[in-house]
Every structure is written in C-alpha cells, then in structure tokens.
Amino acid sequence: MVRFENVGMRYGMGPEVLHDVTFEINPGEFRYLVGPSGCGKTSLLRLMFLAQRPSRGLISMFGSDVMVAKRGELVGLRRKIGVVFQDYRLLDHLSALDNVALPLRVAGAKESEIQAHVYELLAWVGLADHIHALPDSLSGGQKQRVAIARAVITRPRLLLADEPTGNLDEALGQRLIRLFEELNRIGTTVIIATHNKSLVVRNPHPTLALVSGEIRTEKSSEKTAKNTNGKVG
Amino acid sequence: MARRAPAVLALGRDAPSRFLPWVFALMVYLAVLALTGVLILHSAVDRWQRGEVGTLTLQLMPQENESAGARIVLAEDILGGIEGVLAVRVVPQSESLALIERWLGVGNVPDDLPLPRLIDIDIAPGSGINAESLERRLAESLPGISVDDAKEWLDRLADFGRSLELLAIAVVILIGLAAVATVVFTTRMGLSIHRNVIELLHLIGARDRYVAAQFQRQAMMLGLRGGVIGIAFAVATLYGLRHVAGRLDTPLAPDVLVAHWAWALLAAVPIITALIAMITARVTALRELGKMM
Image (cartoon, rainbow over all chains, first blue to last red; front, side, top):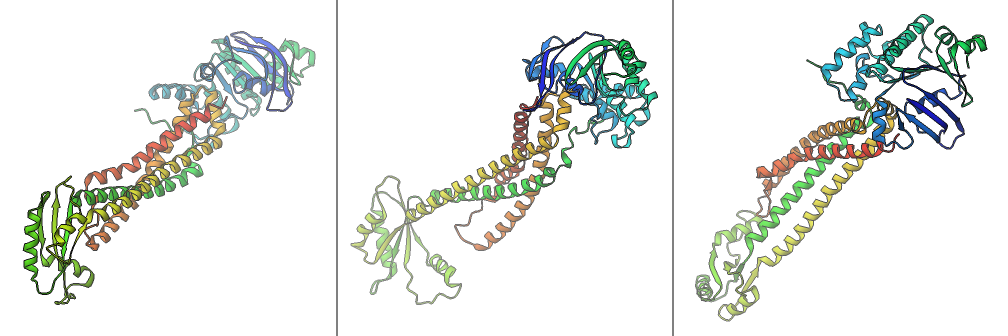
C-alpha cells in the first residue's frame, strides 16, 4: 500500500530533512511513527498524504508511482487517504458539521446524503450536541474529534494522524486510540505519528522509528517498550 | 429539505471583496458613458451622411434693380433644365430668418437686413454635378450667387466623428482590460491569502476546478454588485445629459438614447462585466492552482 525506497527530501534549497528512507506498509496494518521532535515525522507524513514530492527516491502509494503521477491522478490517491493534522486545520468559519462534510462535498456527494452521514459520525465521536458549533467555541479535544471525523468520513483506505493525542488528556487519548483500532479492524490502514511514549506502550502496535531523518529500525512497540524502558524513539 | 452548502473559502471577508465592487462600479460607469458616446457618435455620423448627401444650396444675394422674386423664378427655370437636378426647393424667407434668429435672438433681426434667398437642390447620384460646376453655369445669368455643398463640411465633420467613435471604443476596450487586470490581481491575492485552506482542500481530494469555482462565483457576484451600482449612476448621468441636450435645440443634437435597443445594450454592460470577472477569475485560479502540488 505504501512503499518508500531511498527517499530523500529537502524544503527548497535547505538541508535534507529525510535521508534514504525505506520502508513498506501493507494493507490493514496499524503502525506508530515514532521519534523525537524535529526528527522528520511530519515531513514523512507530508510525503505520505501527498502534500509534498520527495527530492529523490521512489514513493509508491496504492501501487501508483507518486514521482511521475500527474496532478489529476493525485486527486484520486488523496481521496483514499484520511489525514488528522496536528493543528487540526479546521475551517474557522464553518460549523463542525460543515467541516466534517467537506471531503464529501469536494467529492461531489449529494447534500441530502451528506447530512445523515455527518450527523451519525459526529455522534460516534461524541459531538452530537456540538454539530453547529464553530471551531472557536470548541475545546482542543473536541476540535481533535471533529478533525478525526473529517478524516474518516469518506472511509479512507489509509488513515494518517499527526500527534492526534497531543492535546488530549490520557482518558480521551485512550478513547481515541480505541476509535483508530476500530477503524483498523474494519480494514483501514492506520499510521499514527506520536512522541507519546505511554500511548505506544499501552496500545502496542509495530513502529517505524525515525531518528534525524532516517528510519533506524522497524520494530514492534512491545520490543520498543522493553528496550527503552518506556522511552520511545 | 437539504440546506445549501456554505462557501468553503471565506472570500467575502477579504479586503479585495470590499473594494472590488466599487472598482467595478467605477469601470461600469465609465464604460457605459463611453459606450453611450460611441452610440451617439455612430448615429450622428450616420445621420449627417445619410441626410445631406446629394444636396447643394444655392444662395441668391440681393441685387439692386432686380427683384428677388424674379431672380428666384429665373434660377428655378435654369435649374429645371439641367440634367441631373432631381428637385428644387425654395427655402421660405421665414426659415432663413429663423436660422439668423438663433444667433441674434427672436425679434432682434433688423427688417432691412439683406438676407440671401436660399434654394435647396437635390442632385442625382453620379450626375457629375458639383457646387463649382453649377455655380459656373448659373453665374452667367444670375450674378451674385454662390453654391454651397454641405456634403464637404459634413464629410469633414463625419471623419472627426468617426475618429471620436474609435477613441470611445478604445476607451471601452481599455476599461475591459483594466477590469481583467484587476480580477487577475485580486484572484492571485485571494489565492495567496487562502493558500493554507486551498492546500487543505487539495489534500482532502478537491480538484482545481472545485477551488476555482469558489473564486469565479465570488468574482461574478462582486462584478454584478458593482455593475448594478455603476449603471445606476451612469443612467442618472445620462438622464442629466439628455435634459441638457434637449435644451440646446440644435439640428445636430443626437437623440440616440431614445432607442430601446440602446438602453438594452447599456443594461447588458453589468452582466458582461460580471461574466468577464467570472471567466477571468476561473482562468487565473486554474492557472495558479496548476502550479501547486
């Protein structure tokens, strides 16, 4: 599903932030992307959710070579990916309902179909009472859940989340991981970038460890927890 | 019933959305006035040329020892015998007097002012008769006459009118180009202001034409709003001008705006402006979005 081969990436003329990154993720996997702040997790995610092209190497998403894909082809690939951004990236002038409905609207879904679907999903993430609330009136955790609902509304084949528990208390973070695991069980491949060590230890799944822009190891989080005595990265 | 989806990009809150309707209003105002100028000039030039072609005017200056009536009868006789002369009309003295009164004022023309008598002569096209040749033929029997060809100076006037018409058309085109440049600039500004949201839309699977549609809809609405304001001011100005022109009482004063089609053409200006704005915004947005990832 996701294949990186010797991928390097730099922003403009700056230094390379990812070097020779090679890994493969198969359909149905649940992975953590771990590493200290500034190690390149967000850059790696940006390559995966097709916000950026690499400077070198090969990236294959759903069997398509991203390096040679035309802009029109990228649209089709992006619609298979759901993204939960670290800063949520909700549109301030739109209600929770309209933020969540956005991926369906850009895909041209009928308004009558959108409504019922969005109501159901917002109820699922516990925001049934905040459907018409603007993001500014929501707490960090509520915004996070709106962002998650938006990421999964189209039932994506791949779900990418950048520090999804960063602004949540531990109980809510746990609930969120259960939600991701539920999605994973129904077939969605999930990749979560995090530096929340306890989260990884409590909910063990295989990890991709990124250090200074390089993939150092691919290991299960059980081993990670054991080797680092609870310190991930 | 499903409610209408809100605009994804908050373009209405941007600075360009606040000033653009007024820019469009000014452009439509100027375009309508310039276009009115084109219509007036076109109609006037057409009328000057159509109405006066083939008409010569004979002036019989008063002569001592000879009555004006006898000179007129003689002139009519001679003109009637010339091949190519279609019609001869003696201009009544009252009409000549009215022409003078326009300058001197009614009742201010002295009774003893020696007024020439005028005879309008219609000439068949292609007859080869012109003012000079006719004057030569008549001068032998009627000393103190002159023949004027109105076509000559009307042609010069028409040439001048046509030049002004072209100038007014150029002004309309320039206003259109300025509108296009304004929309290109504001669309680029909008794309820059909303770059983050546009990136998000792309990442959740929006096609360029979906994003461009937001800009084209906004540009069309602003164009229409500005256009309505502009044409309202332009119509008020034109009514004012018509009122002033109506008081001039000159045979050269144009009255093109009476025609319904002229009003319909002017009313189309805001719609055309909105369409230009919409198409320009779409093309600009698609071109700029194509440069993004």
